[in-house]
Amino acid sequence: MKKYFKLSIIIILIVFAQCKDDGISESMLLDNKQAPKNLAYQEIANAREFSSLRSNVPTIDTDNLMPTFEIVSARKEDGTTLDASFMKDVSIQNPEVIEKPLEPENYYFSNGVEVTTYTVVDYTNSGKITIADNNNFDIGTYYFTINVSTTQKETTFNTLFTDVFKITIGPQLVTNLLYSPLAQNLVVGQNSKTTKPFLITGNPAVTFQLSSDEDKLTINSQTGEISLKAGYTTVDNDTIYPGVNVISNISGEITSFKGQSFLMLVASLTPVNLPKQTKYFFYPTLQANNKLYGYSTEIIRAGNIPTNLVWIQQASSPLANLDTSLPKINGKKAIVTNAVVGNVSTPHESDVIINSQDLSQFKLGFDLKAVFYTSNVFVEYMQDGRTPTDLEIYMSTDYTGNNSTASWTKINDDISCLINANTGTPFIGTPYPGDQKGANPDGKKNSSRNADGKWVRCEFDLNPFKNEKNFTLKFKFNSYFDGTISGATGRSGRFIISDLHYKATEQ
Image (cartoon, rainbow, N blue to C red):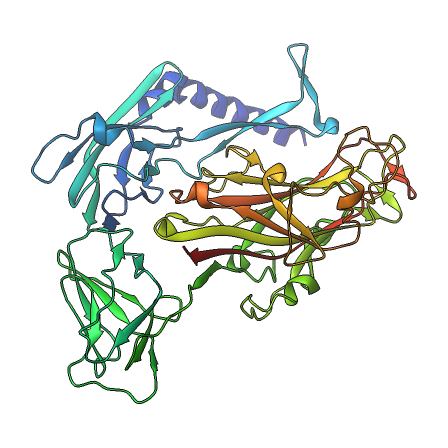
């Protein structure tokens, strides 16, 4: 046994001696670090003039060091360097260092100081290039030169990647074609024709083409005016819903428009008066918590509500169903949050964020409204008479997916309301929750506006926002108390949202 022990000691000493003689020093490790290399972006070939775009996240070899990206310059195909009027709208993202809290059981001391947090590096969007909307990038090809640097202790490595990111920008396509009015009369034998359509968006270098009803109609390829085909006649008034192709003269790309909400033509032997039309251009079903169905949610404080019970589906508003002017929406639901669990109320805060909408497509010749139905049920006042909860309503024109960084304006006091009615004289401002009885410390109770357990038809005027391309509504279930409330006094209750829709009515 002693023989083997002595042999082991000898082997260890030999290995130690070899490590000491041939060991790799810290400076040698640093010397072996390399500058960033192999930066690669996916080329963008279908961008649109003056429109926002985002690159992919590039690949790069940084030798396991954290990179810093910088856009050094950009140029056009002919070599012209882009000036500040272009570059002010261009940005590039870098890794984000995030500080997160440790669990209390994982706290530790370092040099006598208690450490309660740790840092992580988020590389999710590293190197992603963004060009903001309404920029100066017109039709053409552009190249971007990027510098990437890394740092190891006091040493910085830099690599310049020339023309590493390429984008090709084509004409902005026509996404909104407006014939006004939406319903027009063409009289046989009178050489009558429609109005010229408005190109709300897109490059105006286009021609027009019919995609349907060519046996009845003809279109002016330059102006878009539609008239009856020579020799066409009718016995009864014919209703026609023509399809129109808009063809880019630059790229040859085609955008098609068709449908009852696009254009209705009535062909007749004598003039016919046609009523003004209403377009319900956004009427989500709310049938699941998904943007596919019109909304998303964010829980700020869950309280004691299980997350799977926050903003769940129930039957849509019976009051909305009585309005025969509304379109029939298959599968539509209301959404509800009940903040009381086991007869106990705890502070809860959550948001319902409605899909952003482009209102600018209706900026000419339309009256715009947002309509929705709400209800508060089982809300009981706290001992001082205040409501414990409310449904707050907000709007934003700069929400792009980050709830906390968007600018939100509360609009409860700007909403026209009817209680248990679809018609009548509305009052302004959403009703205070509850039955309006008892002490009134908030000064908002009004016995004539008791909506407790009832449906409220709410309408918000969108006309001041006709030029907005990114209009967003948000509903917030908010709580105004701390701690826990048991029993009826101060009961948080539930709030319901149903049949939200945006409509554009011809003026």
